[in-house]
Amino acid sequence: MFNLLTEPLIRFDSVRGERGAASLPEVYAALMADEVASFPALRPHQRHAWHAFLVQLGAIAMQRAGVVGEPPAAPDDWRSLIRELTAEYEDDAPWRLVVDDFIQPAFLQPPATSVDLITDYKTVVATADELDMLVTAKNHDVKCAVAEEAGVDDWFFALVTLQTMEGFGGAGNYGISRMNAGLGNRPVFSLAPLGGPGTHVRRDIQTLLARRAEMLAESPAGGGDLALVWTRPWDGLKAQSLLPNQLEPLYIEVCRRIRVRTGPDRSLSVQRATSKAARIEAKQLSGRTGDPWTPINLKEEKSLTLAGGGFTYKRVTEYLTSADWRQPILLRPTEAEARSTESMCLVARAMVRGQGKTEGYHERIVPLRYKTIRAMGNALSTQDIGEIAKGRIEQVGRVQRILSHAIQTFLSSGEADNASPETRERARPWLNRLDEIVDANFFAALQEEFEASDSQRESIHSEWLRGVVNSARELLRDACDTLPCRSVHRYRARTRAESLLEGRLRSNSGLPFLFTETGDDDHD
Image (cartoon, rainbow, N blue to C red):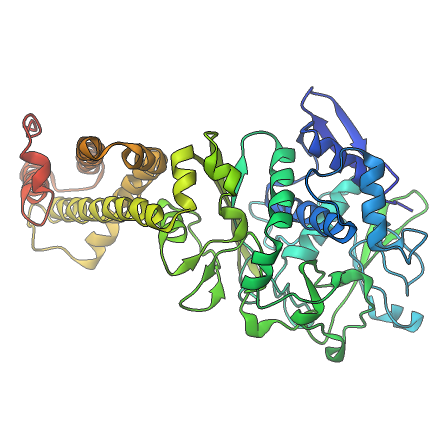
């Protein structure tokens, strides 16, 4: 019944533009050959859950079988490796989406110790999107329970996402261990080679195998041998909670008690039950489980929880360069990557959760040049690029404060010192717009300055900063054209606002060095 190892249940689009379906081993083979362009049933917020599952399972299977070097290329080889992880189940029960025997595991579905516990599974989930981790009860951006004609892979991806990414969902619905708190998230910070999803999966598997000792040394969790958590019986009791030291470092967890059921027409549904405690008792670790994609705050001893607003250039800079953060293993370049002249990408993803709500999915892909990649593997070079970035961020903040003062002056009819909290708040949208302008090319411009010679850095930096200042001037003009002001005062207010902007930019508290160079002071 829906055996992932033998049945073509997962749809994918090939790089040749063809759509087909494959079993899990066939998907691995296609990914290793970089023949996969996309998975049509995979929703954006599910990307990391699927990627992490493939990488963790692939690395565990290869490590247990003693396979080193290149991952297998043939589906049969992958099938054998995966089956070896659950050799005691001759019927492939842990890889079947539906298993009627309640005391046997099914895919990402832990068994119970007694058939009598079937009465615990009272809640029925009729659609795949209702099973997913997205909170859609308010029916706003994403509508709830609409996937009535979902394919098997819609259920499959929803199941993987729920069991490996979900947080606390109220009494009896505990979240995963790989996040800082029940209302946190499992963010991603990783290097990825250019190419399709297969190149990323392949790179991460090989990196984890090569750095296993490093991963063990850094992780408070791990050291045990349980890799597939759903193969152990779970009745939802606190006494059955697993401890981190029982787990394989790359363990694939489950956080909810569910069973997938099928009707006469092969339609699927899910029955859910609650639990008395979390499946893995790791609260004391605050998310420091050795997740190879998640940065760790060394000062606060907890994993990153992305807040609303997403991966802004300020946050990404902090996570990449601050000594307060330990970069995850998959964000550090390998020796081969550090020697290479190939470009890569920084991949950052997170689903921001709130209490009883979803606060947004955030994803950012930053192209990285080879010199920057090399710097990420060297503490001194990381400090160098970090200092350049911090200087730029501080100067943007200075321009924003001056712009805010100028807009407040306009709103106060030209009275620079008569601003109220209300006028400060009304100026904020233009400050945010300046942030967006800077954000659009921040990392490309940063790398250009970092990679330049010492003699060229100053001119490159000044050219970038002049662009920021010109954007601030344009935003002030737009604010003066848009915001209300009494017509009798508008000319005076605008003149004083523009004069204040230019005067403060040239003052000692502004950016005076930018206007002492020949040809820079050309504003009338």
